[in-house]
Image (cartoon, rainbow, N blue to C red; front, side, top):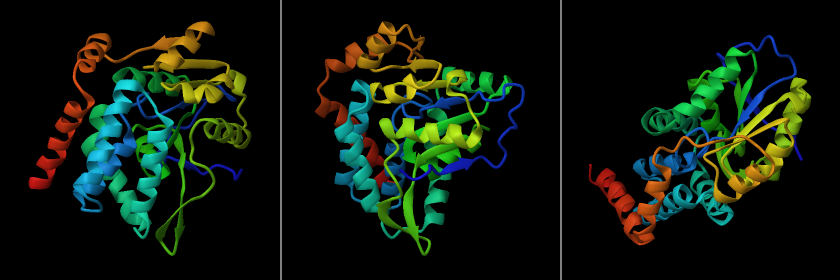
Length: 270
């Protein structure tokens, strides 16, 4: 596997006081509510990169993710669609798009509790890295805006300044995240037994299991059980989670998706 592409925030704070230690944070449903790639898709729709029907498909997958947690089939579907849509786009335009997505959509969805955890690590002198399947262009913007150390994200191939529709290395998800963090630890001189990792998804158990301090945040059902069985700390920052979930389950997925579709229609009509 190629060495991971690390994007260090230009204004990242210098780590001091705890050499060998670091904290790794997943993004979707861990640092922020919902899936960041969905908001990239929404912004691309606003820029008329694809159709309302395609946007509605993203919306259904986003809703399912928020209600049920990560689904590999949906994750791969959105990834493949995003790669296809991005083919031929200028890398610089996507970087600017990432900044717009953060400022207009993501910043309001950052979980205050998770944000506080990142700040605690930084104050203790530990580097804080985002590790996510989100495109590295978007992940690096999030890291920079939150004054974190940097980001590991999925890297798309660029030729002559344009996206080719192919990945460099693997989609940074599941075991690939663990492999990426292992490479990062080697490059940065980190002792994983003295590091922390945070995620909401059972698919990130390989990453969580390789550090000395694994923590489940807003966990899906399988990760909650796994964390309980292994005596891992669990933080849930979703206010009214049980009541909200119970209420939403009484509505049909189609009805909820219609509400998201109406949101896209409103954007379209502006």
